[in-house]
Amino acid sequence: MLFSIIRIFDRLLLRLLARLEVENLENLPTRGAYIAVANHMGRLDAALVYDVIKRRDIIIFVAEKYRRYALIRWIVRQLDAIWLDRYNADIAALREVLARLKKGWALAMAPEGTRSKTGTLLPGRPGASYLAAKSGVLVIPVGGIGTEDWRVKQNLRRLRRTEVLLRVGKPFTLPPLPVKDREAALAAYTDEIMCQIAALLPPEQRGAYADHPRLKELLSGQD
Image (cartoon, rainbow, N blue to C red; front, side, top):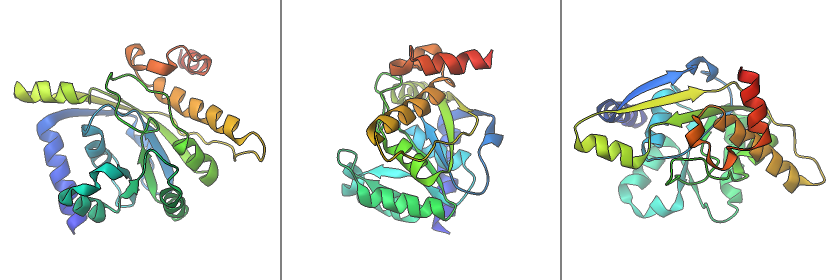
């Protein structure tokens, strides 16, 4: 009941702040486990998860630094979100996510691990690639355009809604991690995830992956 109320409030807030367009929404399954990976530019991104993914069994991470706020702690409990220590290997959080993925939940996360202050892609961290390789579930890239905090605040001051575009890419999977050279494999898997996201973004947002050979392959395949 409380989850539904929070979701209704979330959608009302989004309608006030943004005019949302989603391309290829059909690429997000309505059931079964998957990991949706997206770029992260603003606080609006978390709200978009509960508007676009029309399921109850959604997993999101919330940074430990927000635990000190009573309201956020309450919301986290109602949403079954998972606290994450972004600066250390949070094994307990990863195990909980793997257990839920095994039960068919959907995970939404930003591989960059933090908001990009420039609006361009930051180097990805290995958490998403580890979870994808370990679970074997579908990985679905999402490119977000227009959610920067400064843009939303500027439009709010002008009593305008922000134009937001989400592009949902085609699902793919990652192979299991090899016994040897696991770090190299994780790095390659992370590059694959980030380049898949970059391919959904305009050139000026591709950041650390703008000149990556894999991105060029993906873009050439779109022609």
